[in-house]
Image (cartoon, rainbow, N blue to C red):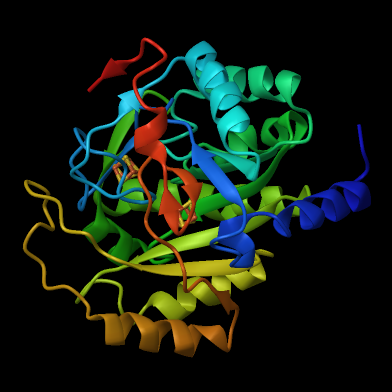
Length: 294
Ligand code: SF4
Ligand code: SF4
């Protein structure tokens, strides 16, 4: 096992070619592998038949791949896109809700290409359980969507949380989720993983609370936060809540920029996005692995 200083150095080096973490939107490509359809929480802005709105544009169906299909797809995309640097697991559900699938996918690809950068996004509920294994599997970048660090606010955002065989509602569910997000991020950064926190800005719900979340992200050792617009999903609890304007989002990012580095170039990509952030090429690589459309 490498020591922590070596891991930090290697992960920082990988950040140089990670288009989301370094802002090089048109130079290097990343691909999302849609291998994680399950989720263990219910956000009020999500309808599960679509992609996870935490990391992907909703309203677009995606193919779901087995780990073997995902590895085949990786090989094909790597051949077609020599500037491919990053493999991300971003749903369409939560990447840790079915960890078997994520573990196997990462192991297969790592065997093919030990140099690849692995990036993973999660709601954080199971991060304390898997952070160590993620580091061992070679994951260098982790994103946790953390919309609040206050249970009263959290209870307005999360309908329920499924944890250790039980379903928790309201503030109890929110408290479990948040405690795990905080300890999972802390463990991840202490292992040398580069962490980002995504925050969905929700009008009248968490908008004035966001700087507190950013402060917490900083305290936990995160590199950057990504304050995002809500994309309303038909049929979700938050389908009709008023949206924050671009101006309000930019104002909040600017305000929080005095606390921690901010992401300004997130495209809220699909769970099967492929290419540079400026040029999605996922359509050119779909449907050739015998996978099922959902
Ligand atoms: Fe939906 Fe993602 Fe929230 Fe799960 S974590 S409920 S998939 S938005
Ligand atoms: Fe990068 Fe944002 Fe797209 Fe994720 S959703 S790959 S962070 S640009």
